[in-house]
Image 1 (cartoon, rainbow, N blue to C red):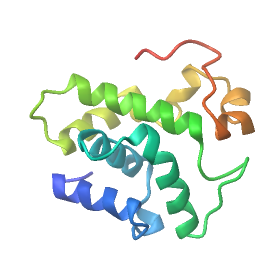
Image 2: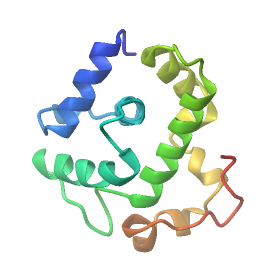
Image 3: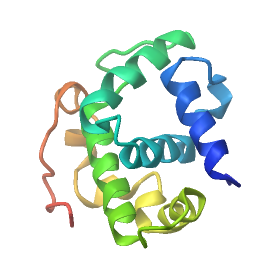
Amino acid sequence: MFASESEIESLALGMINCTLPKARWTHAAHFASALWLLRNPDHNPFKEMPDMIRRYNESVGGVNTDREGYHETITQASLCAAQNCLTGAPIDAKLPGVLDDLMRSKFGQTKWLLEYWTEDVLFSPAARRAWVDPDIQSLPF
């Protein structure tokens, strides 16, 4: 997936600086960026990533509406999953290995959120705009 720390850093900076090609902004790339930001003391991804993603979406011709683009609940839940994976890894673990472990876990699957939210709630405009608590069961972290 990602072979080195520098490859993950380059991807995260490409998203932040809006220079990353749209085709490279994959599900794994979202998590790679999240892990890099979580490990970087100069950033607070829970506060910064929403605007980063919105800017990035617009830079590649996307929009941020009630139906597409940035999604607050998914972003915040995914950041929690990434932080949980990072916290559980050895302190000297390399990000490519942490990312591989995360992507192999249930949290790396695109539909993992549906264990915690119904589709109606998760994909509602309210959940896209702001955090909405899970309506099936609480997150495990």
